[in-house]
Image (cartoon, rainbow, N blue to C red; front, side, top):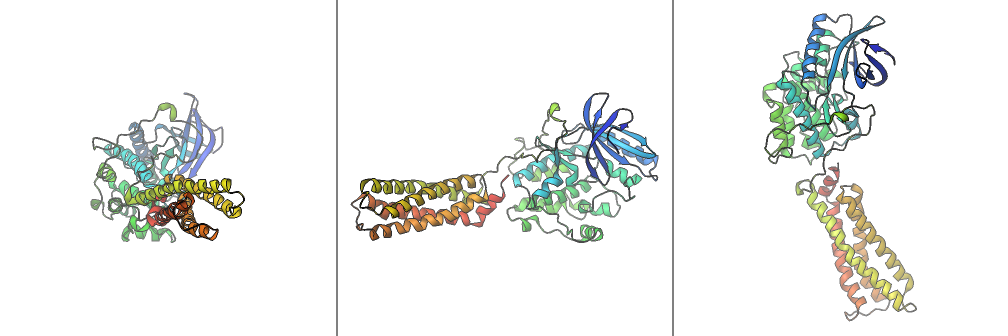
Length: 458
């Protein structure tokens, strides 16, 4: 392929956008309507028969007619001959964003649960719409799930897998389908239906949750296919403990070997995904498809992955309770530190010649730093940053030691063991109480549940 090539006298290729095993994707221009488009070019081998191509065209036309916001819009399907090469090409909307595969590559620990739920619901909604019209995708995988920079998920390449199986469009003549996401019945060449797509979706959902595929990818393709046919997946919860039983069970049901043991359709999966407290819809029905403004459907840049999901609530089940406690206790230390700072400053001003200036200045500086770091740590932890957790833990320990030693410092520098002065009240009451609160903040921060809360950051 080359820049400037015109397909069917209408679509001019401008620049390559990506390359895959089943063809190249180019940015192009529809010269008749003067709009940017994406063009997927499939090289047909000599063994490709006309009947197979016709079947693909019919299925692609059905998918194009779905007109669903979660399915890539196909504008045209045609053939072209260039220098003896027989090409089949699809003209599609040009989207801004990147595919799920590139996002997962950057998140080896998995995606935030709220984001997984949001994207999964959108994928299921698109699959449900396609399945209702008798269209089965046959190759659901992260590379075929496109995330726009507006936060929407688009399912791409409906029908192309059937074309590959029927006409051997891949350059090697191998059949289509991606081993990491193929259902057992697809591997064995048996009849496929919508439950085949649900199995592949289960593989994708597992990877979104854990950051890894459930099959061992360290061996060859044959071993991967064997695992799909014979091996029971490890529960996602065993890889990522903050996944609840309901979601872990749903993934395992999607990965059942027998189609009859899987959920019956995408709508059923969406209902189970939402759980007892539906987020997307107050009526309890399937999530309403998001409406994408037409003017935001096109473009040619590939920006960073969208951040679409709202921040999850600080639920106790996922570490929000201990994180909240750590934040609150860290903030409760601030009034005590402020009183200590003011008391030291007063001593320096009232008794400039008699007071141990070096020791007081050191205490003043330490207290100021402690207050700043605790406040900063509380803010970061509220934002689910791991750094905030460790700032509270480390500084809480320092404040605990500092507060407990204040009384000893006071006595060693000539102070009296009494409660008749403001200074003695600070060192014998305020400082120890602040130390106890700081120690509690440190304990809450180091708990594993607080760490899980930080892992859920979107």
